Each structure stands twice: as C-alpha cells, then as structure tokens.
Figure 1: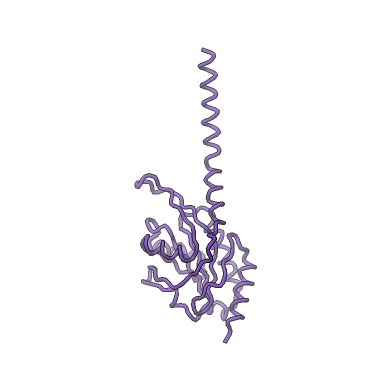
Figure 2: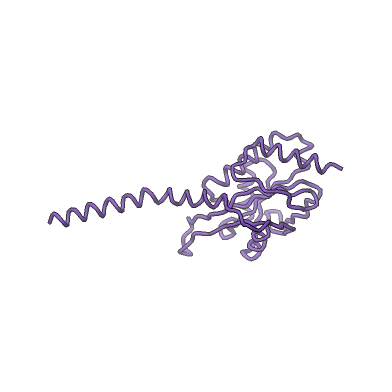
Length: 205
C-alpha cells in the first residue's frame, strides 16, 4: 500500500513538472526559431502575393525602400513586438520619409490569415503596413529565397489553436528590389529609424 501511494505521488509530481515546463518549452522554441538563420546568403527577389486590395508585388514599390517581415497574426509576442517597434519607428519619420518607405507583412499561416484578417491586423499598427499571403507553394518559394524558417505545429487538422515557429528578421530591400540586409528580432525603433534613414540617404538620386 505504501509503495502504491509513493508511486502515485511520484507520478503526480512528474505530471505536474511536465505541465509547468511545457509552456516554457514552447516559448523557448518560438524564441529560438526567431533567431534562426540559414547558412546560405538569401538572394531575395520579386514576388506577388494576395492582399485585401488584390495582388501586390514587391516590384510595385521599385521606387521605395521596402521592409519585409514574415510571421502570422496569431503570433503571441514575437510578431507584435517587431511590428510594434516598426510602427514606433514609422511615427518618427518625416512625411517625406514615409512617402519613400513601404512595410510588408507576409503571413506564413495562410490557413488562418486571410487577406481581410491581415488587413485588420496590419491596420492596427497604423504604419501603412500591407498584409500579404498566398498558397503554401507560393510562400515556400519566397521563404526559401529569403532564408526564412518556419514550422507549423498542427498535429490535428481540426486544431485551430496551433502555433507557428518562425524566424523573425526584418528584410531591408532597396529601391529597385535588391535585398540589402536583414535586421534581427526585437530591433529597437531607434535602430529601425537609423537603418531606414541610412538607406534612404544612400539611394537619393
């Protein structure tokens, strides 16, 4: 009887520790993936995806500096942090600088992120962000060229509350469509402003 009680208590402790540790392991997984970068240098390039207003191509903004960020609207903290910092940076720019900049948010979760949902989400940041998505084949082609890593954790097709681990770099694309550099997760608003002004100055006619 004592052995039974002992093993029951021990089992309860193990289960309790697992439950306590699980959210942290999920969070660590998301944080680790946010900084993942492929060894090969991303080549970037043009792409066309769907927005709430219709198809949008990177080449539509050949006369602007473009910042591209990959994520998904159900992201608990990584995407809101990055997009929030981008929005704060955007508000520090002059009207002339804003006119020369376009921010694109590409969702890798096309199952849940419709163009309409992406518009609502992007508009929340009030920084002119355009939300884009496409088919898995279209997205995989683009993420491979930009060195983006993502993994959807949906074991059951009926599960609507799955998470998506994804790298979280912001890609800086100069007027003309050349991928210049990529900024790490949680870049501060001030550093975004410095980078934007540096590239806008370099590309002045």
